[in-house]
Length: 538
Image (tube, rainbow, N blue to C red; front, top):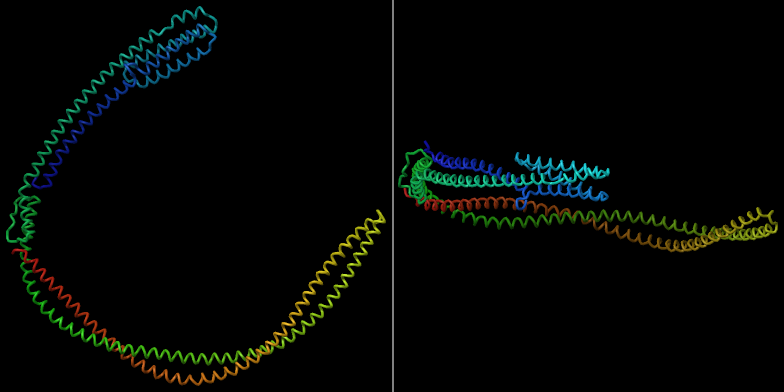
């Protein structure tokens, strides 16, 4: 049992953990008890103030004292209403702080003392209310007897008892708290010591049997790392993890020993073979390099001839196309010039017709001008007549008021007519100037058109001569183009054949170069492997 390392480690770690869990449970229980004592002390200390005087009790007593003083002051001076207000404030303080103190008190005896204290205060309140009613009703004699019976002796007795009980609870709570703390410190000290001792013992129990096995394992791995495969590894009879590792190392050593021996023999054979193959490859690579250089020179020359022939063919084709395009363009240009000549003759005739029509327009404009002059005279006469009518209407008095309105409208229309005729006259004059200018420009344009017709005729004759010359060159271009094209095809075939031969030579040279590089790397690898394998002792 517990022959495995993991079993020992698990047991060695479990026992200290169990001890710590038990110690933690005891510490937790003691801490909770300590917190209870601390809460009790805090509750009691919240009741007590400086020098053992309870804060709430002191405030309650202050409220009761204020009530007694206010009752007596009101008995002496009933007219002062502020004493009742002061009494009410004291009573509210008494109720407020007594309720707060009662909510904080947990001790039964202390709660009973507080109830007696509150009962005495309520009794004092009832007597004070009777005094207020008697004084307000004018019964001074009865009020005097009640005032004498009001005192705070019983209240003070209850307050003193509450203070003593609180001090006793405070003392007992502090004592229990200190005892609990001492017990908790002892438990922590003893538990921690036992846990440390158990942890050390379990560590020794776990590591002591492993020390010798780990030493043997380190020695075996150091020999293997140094390449010593001659010594056998001592295998442990135990079935723990280290024994299994030692057995696996022994098996690995035997297999590695056999493998290294075979690798050494194969490396020697491979080194000699690669050396011979590399020498043959070098000679073949040199031969293929020379052949590739010659092939490249021939290929370059053939390619230059093919390129030159191809460019010449393209140039001749372009020249033939350009000559044909030039002939066609010249023919179209001649036809366009003939149509242009016809159009310009029609344009010259049209300009003559336009000039005649512009002259007619000038005469019509003169007639319009005379009509406008007549209308202007009529407008002036109408204006004069309207003025005379207005004068006659003024003379007629009330009977001529309607006629005066008509005369005024007539005069306004006459003025508008005069303005309109003036504008028409201005426009007619401008039109006459424009027509005169147009006639002059059309005459000039007609002369230019006539000159252009003559120039177009001359250009058409010259273009006809150019067309004849260009058309005579086209058959010659076709003949030259055909011969150059045949030469280009032959040069292209030679170039393609040389390119294929060059590519084949290049591929052969690359293959030989790669083969030589591979053989060189293989030789280096074989030598390196031989060097590395020589480290092992078999």
